[in-house]
Amino acid sequence: MNTDIFVKYKKRLIENCGQVIVGKDEAIRRLGVCLVASGHVLLEDLPGTGKTMLLRAFAKSIGGNFKRIQFTPDIVPTDLTGIHFFNQKTSEFELRKGPLFANVVLADEINRAVPRSQSALLEVMEERQISIDGETFRMEEPYIVMATQNPVESYGTFPLPEAQLDRFFMKMKLGYMTEEQEKQIMGREDAKDIIDRLSVCITREELMTLRNEYKLVNVSDDVKDYIMSIVTATRESERLAYGVSARGTIALYRASQISAAMEGRDYVIPEDVKREAIPVLSHRIAVITRSHMDSETFISELLDELPVPLEQ
Image 1 (cartoon, rainbow, N blue to C red):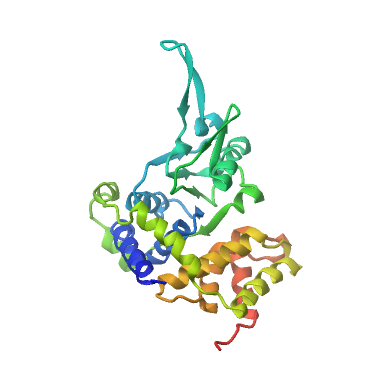
Image 2: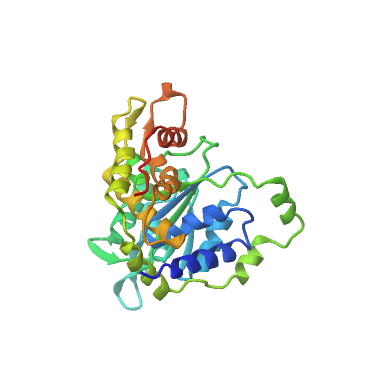
């Protein structure tokens, strides 16, 4: 297989989005992994860290139709999916499509919507289709839902149910920039103006090629066993209410393949698995409150404890 296309894809994506968001190359790379894997992204962080700007820049970089939805408690499912309305001129019912019909959907502050509206995303995220009044519509590829949520302000928010969290391929955090990086953005032009000038750096045809090629990356039995040892450990741990689902196992496997290809290799090594384990698995487990740790810390400690297969 040709891994050069993956290396160039990563480089173009980081350079393009890096014009807007400084010092977040790893987050941009992971967004690229999610896109190739046909997975959705949940970006959870403090206000003002650039979540929305990063996702806007990413959407502009990959082209396609883009829609942003500002989630609020009064939003209803039909605001997302669309409705059939009666056209008095033609005396017929017509479909007015909602924002979920875009190629790239930015669900801003998704945890501010009531569960009924959040559930409207379940079908489209998993099945790539929307049902309206008994009629089913297939989404046009590429299709990706990118959601943000603020973990600090709990007033007026509705935590995402486990079933919906599991449908996000990765959950990421940006964190603060370093002092040097933050000094770089002082006095520069508005990020929105930079985004408006961004060019499309990955075409639909190139993306389809990447989605076919990454499946050729070889994963040895030892690495497969390593992935399963991580997943099994989460299911057997007494510190967790529940462990990683089968969907999470497949997600880690695919993310490791794409990560390896982006590094120019046609085979997966344990370091690829470790690199993707936290963003892929941390939102798919529930740490028992008395454990006094978060899910990311649990996965990190687990990776340190489990034996890593040696290269043959």
